[in-house]
Each structure stands twice: as C-alpha cells, then as structure tokens.
Image 1 (cartoon, rainbow, N blue to C red):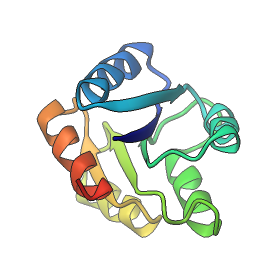
Image 2 (cartoon, rainbow, N blue to C red):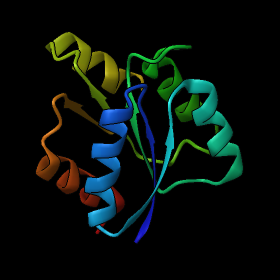
Image 3 (spheres, one colour):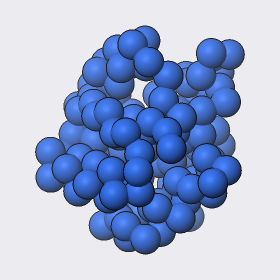
Length: 121
C-alpha cells in the first residue's frame, strides 16, 4: 500500500504508531530526530510522513517547512502529531505546509483514516 516515515523522539510512541500503521498494510520507517529523518528521506521517498513537533535537534515545524519548500519532497503529505493542541499550534502547523494536524495522545482510528485519506486510498 505504501511507505510511511514516522518521526518521533519517544520510542513508545514510535512503536505504537508503527504498529497501528503496519496493521493498515503500510511499510513503516522510523526516525528519532530531524537529522535521522532527513537521512531516511535521502535513502527513500516515503508516501507520507508522520512528524512530531518537539524533536531533540530541531522543530518538526521547521522540518515540515523545509520539506514543503523542496521540489523533491513538496508533494509528500505530512501529518504533524503533537501534544501542542492550541488552535494557534494547529494554524502554525498548517501554515508550515502540514496536510493534517493530530494531537497526542493519538487516536489510532483517526490516524488510520487521515493517512488513507491523504494517500488517496
């Protein structure tokens, strides 16, 4: 069905998201920080990215903005997943180019639905 890159600095959340997305038939690639995520993107282009905002080396908002500005990655849908749940955070996420914004704790059904919708399935 496709490949998803999940970027989060929490091993627990990475495992939970990977399990959920694998059950949906997706191949999951993970990264725990921005540098790792960009290295994964150099290795292969995922069909969708699930991105945390608070990462050890840089902000998910910054990574999202960068990926949307690059012609090689601008068409990859990005779902921002964050504990930051104010309307301003959501507005800012969309302004950086995010295609969807989900708040933690992640509702797995909502994640599945959003991923399928953005991938056109």
